[in-house]
Amino acid sequence: MPTKTSLAMVHTAPRQLVAQEVAIPEIGHDDALLRIEACGICGSDYEQFEGVLRSPMPAIPGHEPLGIIERIGDGAATRWGVDVGDRIAVETMLACRNCPNCLSGSYHLCPTRRIYSYIPLADAPGLWGAYSQFMYLHPNSIVHKIDPTLPAELAVMFNPLGAGFRWGVEMPGTRPGDTVVIMGPGQRGLSCVLACREAGAAQIIVTGLAADHRKLELARHFGAHHTIDVQNEDPVQRVREITNGRGVDVVVDVSSYATEPIVQALDFVTFGGSVVLAGTKGFKAVPDFISDKVVMKEITLRGAIGVTSSGYANAIRLIESRSTPIEKMHTHRFALRDAELAIRTLAREIPDEESIHSCLVPES
Image (cartoon, rainbow, N blue to C red; front, side, top):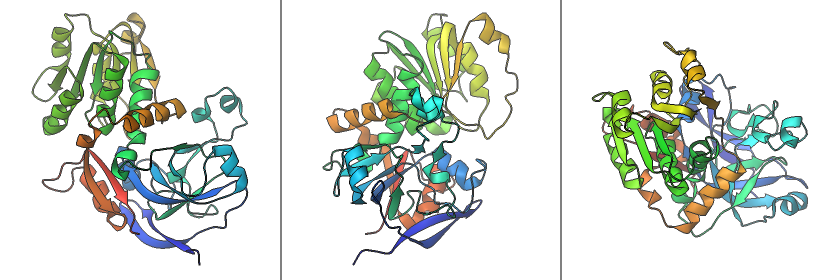
């Protein structure tokens, strides 16, 4: 007899996750039910947990779902090219598919887009996010098949690696021979290193804090040519030294909360270069931001929200190639009921624990 409820960790208040049994809906012609194998944890999970993202509560977090199709309607199976038993990665955004942005291909900029992990539990059928044993797949979902023989904790890296390709290469147009600064050596910063290396960047520089020494070491292992401890070195002076005063073609800021990197990015980048801002700052203003630097250097300044299909496809290609030791980025695997511990570990709230990539794995 089919399971009727799914254990889910529900965000009910700031810094509060509660285990609840949530009803599993009936599946129709155009939707599906996913059995979660793993859900990746990232910095925005912590911001949601803290309450700074102003996301609705109660809701089931989790926007990096990897799983197996448990049930699926005939229409969805035909449209997505998958069937029961297939392993898939699920894109986090649900777009309307009908507005001008969607029809032009920019579905991630749909003005009515929703993100699975921010949909309220009260919105039927409720089983939206991936901090759960099962997850409902809306008819407008975008899914990608992925090799079922890969370990789940590696396959679930499709999201951060997808961000690396989109933010580090696609958006700034990184080309062979370019110089790049990546600000923040977390999983998405490290993913940008891998993507920029794949794109043929000639110089990759990664900045971080003194506490990030392990991550900076991994950045060098992944292909970064230089790393800078911004607390013990002058990052602007070091970038000038490394680039012989020219500056870099591309800057990608994936640091969280800190606003100073945005100011520094305008000094790092060369004339006509590009800056991609992908790290959220908790809606804080940026002190000492001098817009004339953007004007005088004719800098292209872009914000980045999420990942699109091409980024996911490149990430899955890299994972399935087994050519890169991405397993060195994976540090923690948590049971579903330990979601709060997973988030607090990522946020460095647990003494003597350093998380880079981690995931939740539901109990069977």
